[in-house]
Structures are given as C-alpha cells and as structure tokens.
Image (cartoon, rainbow, N blue to C red; front, side):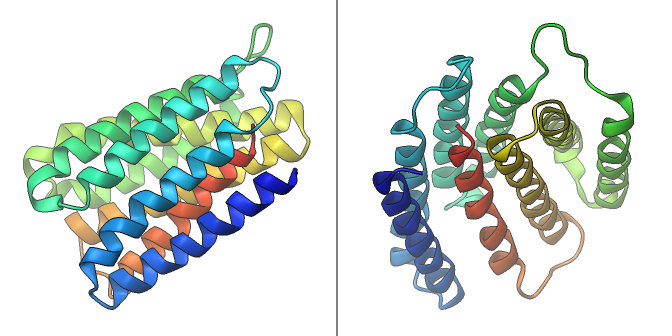
Length: 212
C-alpha cells in the first residue's frame, strides 16, 4: 500500500474508534460527525487506489461506498429515515454484487453459495415474527447481502491473492454487522449491539475499499 493509503486508513480507523466511543457515551453531536466522516475517509482510500483490471471494479466499489454514506446519514435518525437507510444500503449491496460477480467465462459455485443461502434463510426465519411491514424489504436486503458475500467468496476462490481476500473478509464482516443490527432491532435487544455493529461495519467497508 502507498503512504497516502496507509495514512487515510489510519485516519479512518481513528475516526471509527471515535464514532464507536461517542455513541457508547451518548455524545450524539460528535457521533453524528464521526460516523459519516469515517465513511468519507474510507471513500478517499478507494478514490486514490489505482484502478484494477477490470477498471469497472473501482467504479462499482465507489458507488457502493457512496450509497453506504447516504445510508449512514439516514440511520443517524432511524426513527424517521430507517426505510431510506435500508434502501440506500440495499443499492450499495447491489453495486457490491456487481463488483464481486464472476467475470466472463466463470460461473458462481453452488457449493460456495449454499452456506450463505442457509444463513440468510435462517436469519429471516428468526427475524420474521418481529418484522411487521418490513418483512418484504428485509427479505430482499438479506437476499442481496448474502448474494454479495457469496460472490465475494467465489471471487476469492477463483482469483486468490490479497485483494480478493480483503473483499471477502469485508463482505463477511458486513454480513455480521447487518445481522446484529437486524437482530437487535427486530428480534431481541443486545446490550453491546452498537459496538458490535460499528466495530464490524467500519472495518468491513475499509477492507472492501482496500480491495481495489
């Protein structure tokens, strides 16, 4: 990694730590600044990365990060904008799916997808009783994020190397983060939920940005 990439990554991690700390301490003004700032710094990491082959990968990851930033801002006010935040992150997952999907001449492995399909169905089964009007959008979102993680796994198996591994690790952390968020909101409250959610979400996005 270049020196600017390392510097921005460190700044993003420091900002992430500040966001997690301020949220835990109830310092909402600081949290509402640090959370989107962290994603902006992660976007900067992706922006300065050299375009890979194919170059479209960088564009798709940047689009996913951009919609994630919109989702971050919306979820700062979950009582008002939760649906908007969910929609923004759904679009982000679609861009990540397009980035990670197999290239020409390659096919997604059914065997690799099965664990993710099983996990997604199990998660929806657990959440379903408490979803109410969110049942369909949450089902669609779970499908999108599990497909994203499955494609990231397949891409790593097909290509190998550090960058596909970073994308795969980021996808798994993203899946963990959103699973905890959904379980905490729709099933049962978890004491340290926000620490887990943000503590996996920010590294997930940073790893995906570093996969360019």
